[in-house]
Amino acid sequence: MTAGVVEPRYASFKGIMAAKSKPLEILSVADLSLGDQTGPLGARQEIIDVEIAESRAAGEKYVDEGDGAERIVGFLESIKVL
Image (cartoon, rainbow, N blue to C red):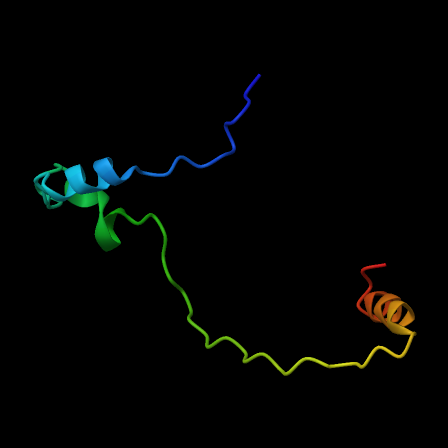
């Protein structure tokens, strides 16, 4: 049984304060000996084209006058979800 696995563990105040005094080690790519595995040479992918995304249009607003459910079903049928 995995009871309690989905609950996040939050840092304690003591742990947060102790982390402030720990040294921070900054590593470069050379320090990690990655060489040609990073950057454009190691990407294994090529960008062919870049396009600007379409701006989103404003949505439709409805005032529910008792026929909200029918309108929702009609909309879902029009976009072929139902």
